[in-house]
Image (cartoon, rainbow, N blue to C red; front, side, top):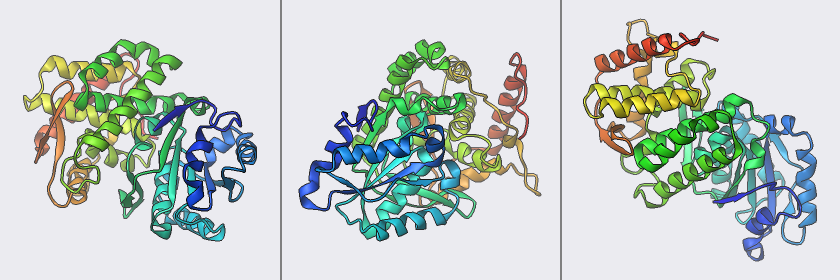
Length: 382
């Protein structure tokens, strides 16, 4: 994992050196996949990338002009984009010593990673995350997936990227909500792994809400480091067991994204999912009230809502649909449910079941809390 600024400036050697590391063993060829929204926000980028490779043609060649594809959940909701990238890999004769360089947010990185890992049984992938969320979290891991059958990440692979290169300058065009989205993953990993990081987030909350660059850089770097440390030293990077501590708050978040038609960004849904599991942890007397309140206040201080009406969506049998997220997690984990809750700030632990009545009580508590916040009230459905 590397950090840099202005990755496509010809004088910056980071990408060139990364791609040229094994050029003698293969073709030294790269295909760049570019997030459509980033290309629209930075219209000069599609010209800058070929110029960068032209300046370093002795080290690595660009197979074609950047392939521009939709990002976000649109990238993950159809197999056609994976197929289009497979076709480009074949048409431009990339081999297992070539590179797919994916430049975009988490949705595009997931899709491109799945295509790269399944072409030739694995073309090298270099991720260049361009959102706060992907620089903090999704760009770091070993997972690639697309959605299918109404479920998040149903079709996917475990395949470590060749490299991850974070360029803080690529965050400049993000909307405020997208800049904020990654903060939820930072709160998540701090809650389950690093109390000192949690304290730092509390200290920097005002600066982070104002998107001050220094505070954001510190958050992104530490969050990415903690995710990488878990993958490298957590003992189960390919999830052959049941433990998924870095999915704290995600069982509800994934379902909320779907129920909202992806109106809720992933980070926004994760913030709600964290709040739900924190309140549940307190109600089960795993977590003391003061610690739970600190988590809720931090999420609010960072600008997140802690309730969405989708939490109370019911099916024809009057059952909470969000509870289907628990069963989907169970399936994903091989039949054994493992949900991370909190016993202290910086310390998560696993439970094998969650009670529906207590979940409903926790949801109603978040609804009442949201309604009591000055100027906020209940979020309005899109």
